[in-house]
Amino acid sequence: MAEECGSSEARVSPEMGELIRNLGHDLRNKFCVVKNSVYYLRMKVDNDDSKVQRHLNIVEKEINTANGIIMDLMNYAWPKASICQDLPLNDVLKRALAQVHISDGVLQHLDLSSDIPALQGDRIQLEHAFTNIMAWVISDLSPGESLGIATRVQDGHIEVRIASAGLKLASQSLDDLFDFHGTPSAYRVALPLLISKSLIEGHGGTLDISRKDDAVTVVIVRFPV
Image (cartoon, rainbow, N blue to C red):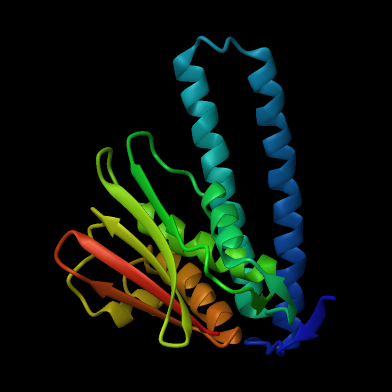
């Protein structure tokens, strides 16, 4: 039976949290209307018109991106308490992977161990955490480059490795990835990763990002068994 575990700690004032929640819900409702319109247009336009289909895909992709930013902002401002239950982590990863857009030609390699024990956690929160990580990892991949996801049990921990062969990670300190300062686009990287880090740590886990060489970046998430 699922039960509440952990605690939620607001990062902003109650008034600001209420404002962010109300605006977030309102904006997401508006985007839902737009997505319904895109669905209607897909049924009405010529499916053979590749240019129209490409632009509808762009609209849908940007809506999903905006929805993700809004959800991250709402979670950052006022995180929800975790609802814990037994989770098959491999299934969580598959569901997260299904929610990210992967460009044609990007290779996928899954090596999910069947020996992974059930993890006590919140399915929605962990799916969101891994969706953010995967979306970042594949954001700069080109056809022929690859995304690898592996799970295993090692040293008393469940370990998840998400690796990209091709992610062009800048040479600055990896800690800067969680920094909101810098270029206007910095928060678009920092906020999702910070949310993922917070959600994973809220489940007793750790998140580390390392660079094996100039072309391979590895995200390692560990949870105690």
